[in-house]
Image 1 (cartoon, helix red, strand yellow):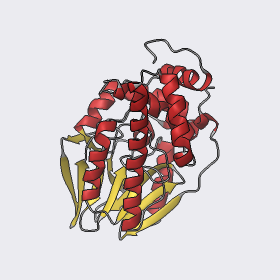
Image 2: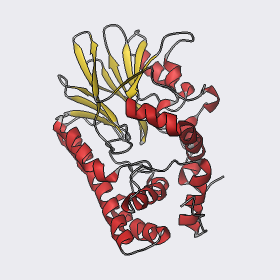
Image 3: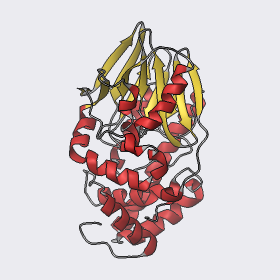
Image 4: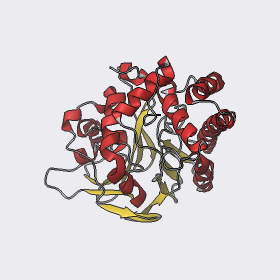
Length: 328
């Protein structure tokens, strides 16, 4: 077993199913990945699918407590396995699933979906309960470039490729009339942003675009549902502060000519006093610093994480073992 903190994280989380407004719900679990639900006149939309079809069944059970309508569409906010591999669990066998994603997200699934699946299952075993129920990669059935609109009766749901931040394909779902935003991992609340596939230089501008929507209620990628405008602003600015602080510190180390281990040790010391209590901090930071180190050095396109690279990186940063050049 690897040394990842998450590999030893076996405690079950308490699930909340909060109503954001009529027919709008947040499925959250104490810092585990969130899902959103929109109930329309002909069916439901799920925003982010959970990690396995078996885990999707719990979301389905919560939906059944508020409506008899079936799930008609699943929206993927980005490509990470922990968000997408449960999609098949929302549709009956032989049915006609509608799975929506940005074209950039589909491109990332083509490029690195299998490697990401293998990597994430190794890092987060608890988050892939019932992994034997996963039929394979989740493929969108419909993609879009910048935005599309779902009309659920008179309810408008805008699906927006908001910009690069957590990944290159980041998508949010915005209900302008209700002022409710399902933000995916562009925004976190009390939970450490995972930045292993991030675009740090773009993240703040993407958060400006998120803030400009004017959400009064917001479901972050991780953390509790946010029910006030002030909480929404706090989450956006907290995510901005974390990513800006981290990238700024890493750039300073790179400018001094430090190697990755030195930059990691320095950045951990800098970040821990302010952010160390956030969920999955110890797990995320090796990936975050490694990606920031790459980007500060001019590598704009994130390298693919494989299970082997995960472990080599962890051992190098936590235990001082050498990384081969191809793994660094």
